[in-house]
Amino acid sequence: MKLTEKAAYLKGLADGLEIDNATKEGKLIAALIDMVDALAAKVDALDSDVEELNDYVEELDEDLGDVEEFLYDEEDEDYCDGDCDCCDAEDCDYCETYEVECPACGETICFDETIDETTLTCPACGEKITCSQDE
Image (cartoon, rainbow, N blue to C red; front, top):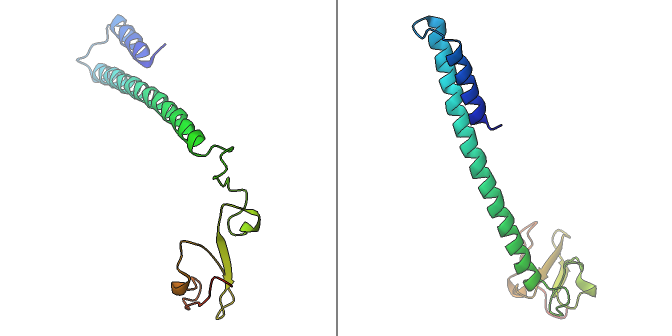
């Protein structure tokens, strides 16, 4: 039974009791029943909205799964599946990452080929690091 149906049932019970709305108690009971009715209607509307949004999110999730499957096809040879731990990419044929040690603080810095090694600075101490492709 929906909340709106329960609220209507309570309203019917109150009408059957023939409560006098002129008394303080009668006014209170009538106001409480009206409030329960309004709350039940609002909750039912919110439940309907939530159900609709859940359906929409499930559709989006399925669509995103299809997109991910298309983009990240595991049989695709040009795809790195992340198992190489890209900061230790010795075994990965797809990720080009490099490690250097900061001469100032000793911090190990990982970077990829998109970083210009002539402008490399240590994120720990801010010292400029000079290295070449050979290193």
